[in-house]
Image (cartoon, helix red, strand yellow):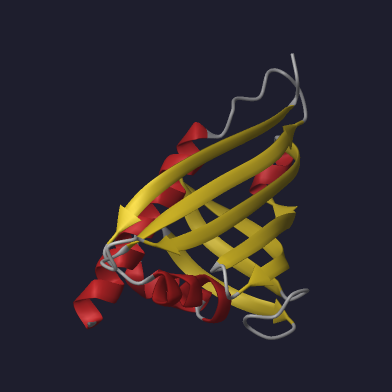
Length: 154
């Protein structure tokens, strides 16, 4: 049984791809306003918002527990509305050797709304560790909250 895995999901949203992408690249600290039940805070520890190599620390709630995740921005492609975060510290590393999040947002062809594609890539520390389905559900719920926040502002 392989310890490496990938989980992915697509979610239709009403917000534009550019606005949704901007939240995760330049304004992740706004996630706590958009989704206070999930994100308590998001702080910049090194670098600048929206810059590869910057380090961001998330304080969030997962499965009813307060958690911390410190991530480095590994890649940004603004033309493709893509960002990749790699976990470098935090609660998830108690069960996973490595963990990364890819978020790509694509405008829908009819011009109304977008499709958010989440890809979680990870390596478990043992085969006793569950695949992170609840974490995938969490980021989808976060995406819905952000979409509602962005479309309320429009």
